[in-house]
Length: 281
Image (cartoon, rainbow, N blue to C red; front, side, top):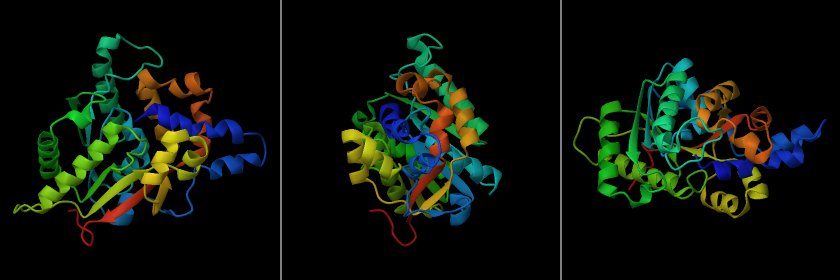
């Protein structure tokens, strides 16, 4: 996850989290009126097998409510792809040698997905920050192989034009996901791809007001979400504890305790594409 951009979103809380009724104004910044609240996105779609396609360790923090409820409430089989080991990130706090950061963050991602009940999680070793430069056919082939192995009926990914945070790795993995799904759908195999493609969407009001140029870019290039669900705030707190190399990032860089961020930002937002009626390609 591009922490810089996400932190710009939560900087809104500095302005709005004063005592009393102002809390509700702050909370409003992290909600979207276009999104209908549901208990579980995967349950709403009737999904039984879910694959998430991400770029970096800790990207799964944006969708942990979806994956947690998919497993615990819906009994779905869940799997993830993380394309890089996050070796170009900054440590906050420092927990190891910088030269070992890729190994550290890979371990954090695997531990966090286990904590969410994820059944299968592969972490690849493409360069952090360099995914757009990787050969397209290679990336597509690897995602296709995971699709055929997992056989998901729901895929969760980044919207290619915005990547939830404007990060180039996110946007590229969103593109690769769509290309891979289209390739599987055009094949002659028994598995013809998922029924639904679900995109994680950032809260537009907060981004528009406090996200600067990057926030404006994301808002201008992402669709409105149709569904909102609980962010499972407790699991998000656990996730940042597990992602120990990133655990203090918000508080040290933006003077906002994590509990305050998630007091306001307590929902996840999703745009859904029904591939049965709106196929890719």
